[in-house]
Image (cartoon, rainbow, N blue to C red):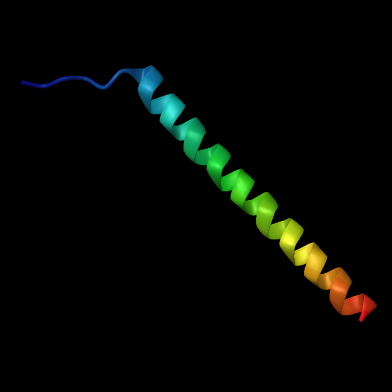
Length: 42
């Protein structure tokens, strides 16, 4: 038997993955900025 996956499930999963990636990107950017500031100040 073939069960079609509901579109809502796919889109919500995609949104979740995209949001996770964006939040990881933001965290990495913040960490990089902080280290840069420390390097400049020291």
